[in-house]
Each structure stands twice: as C-alpha cells, then as structure tokens.
Length: 138
Image 1 (tube, rainbow, N blue to C red):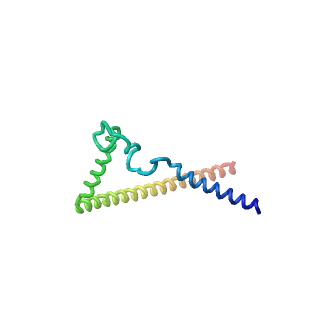
Image 2 (tube, rainbow, N blue to C red):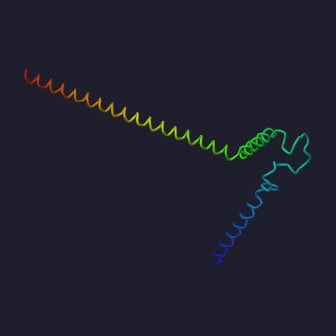
Image 3 (cartoon, one colour):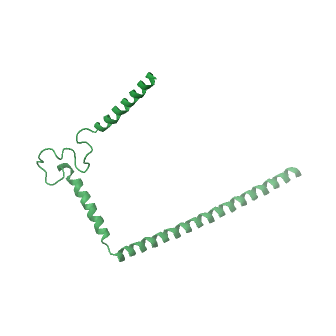
C-alpha cells in the first residue's frame, strides 16, 4: 500500500513540475505581443523615420502598395467587372472549342494510322500466302 501511494505521489509531483515548467518556458515578454518587433517597448528609437525599423521600410511600402492596388480593384464598377468576366468566359469557351478540335484531329489521325497499319498487315499476309503458294508449286 505504501509503495502505491509513493508512486502516485511521485507521478503527481512530476506532472505538477512539467505543467509549471511549460508555463515559465516562454520567458519574460516572449509571445505576448506578436504585432510589434522584439524590443519595441525598450528604449528610444533613433534614426527611425516611421513606426517601422529602418531595414524594413521598403517591405512596409510594398505591403502598402499591394493594399492600395487591392482597394483600386475593389472600387471598379460592377459593369467593368461584368465585362471582364464575360471576356474570361469567352476566352474559356474558345479554349474549350480549340481543345475539342485538337482532340478530334488526334482521333482522326489515330484512325488513319490504324487503317494504314491494317492495310500493311493485309499486304504482308497476301505476300506470305503468295510466297507459300510459290514454295508449294516448286
């Protein structure tokens, strides 16, 4: 009975230690605010022209340009969007028609090749029969 109690107590203590070790594993200030770069709240920012660190200003400008382009695209009128949709549908239909034509051409070519092969086989059979007759007659 004492051994079981000691084992249970030992396992409970280990689980308690693991639970608290994971809680403290993040450390001071880690993982609390993912919106700002590390060290944002510490010290004065010298040489910064904006809220972005000097090496990352170009990246921030690119992201702003992308968001502005998205806003421009959203502001297009419904008519323009419908026209674009119709154009894409028309081109898709053309592509489908062309693909169907190409597949029909391939099928016809395959049929022609098959016919040619059959004709060659017939010729070979006829020649072999003719050769067999000549051999028999000799």
